[in-house]
Every structure is written in structure tokens, then in C-alpha cells.
Image 1 (cartoon, rainbow, N blue to C red):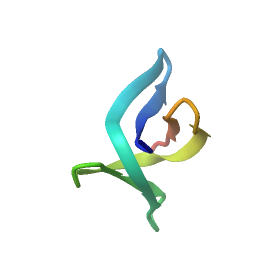
Image 2 (cartoon, rainbow, N blue to C red; image 1 turned 180 degrees about the vertical axis):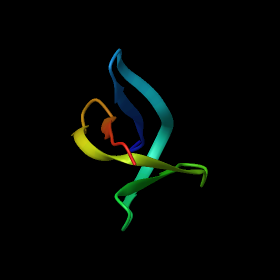
Image 3 (cartoon, one colour; image 1 turned 90 degrees about the horizontal axis):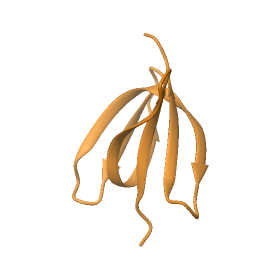
Length: 65
């Protein structure tokens, strides 16, 4: 399977924000739209920091709007 879990970095570490992510689309306003395997979406303010393909892990660094 190709889906991954997305995490947002926080001062305390990493917080899981979505499971089964299959698509990430950058938006013009600097946000990211994440889509999961079942078609659910979540828009987050942040930038892609790291993608660990073998670990199925996406790390997003939050930004202040």
C-alpha cells in the first residue's frame, strides 16, 4: 500500500493529523490540502518538511497565518 500518516511538528514533538494520506496538493495561499484513501480532505497551514517513503510518514512544519 502507498498511503502514509501525516504529522504536524509542534514544540512538544510531532502530532498525527491524518492517516492513510494518498495525496498532498499545495494551495496558492501557502496551505496544503491532504486527501486520504476514502476521499476525506483536510487543509493545513504549513510547509512540507520531510517525506519518509519507507516509513510511510509525512512531516509538515506548521506556519502562522
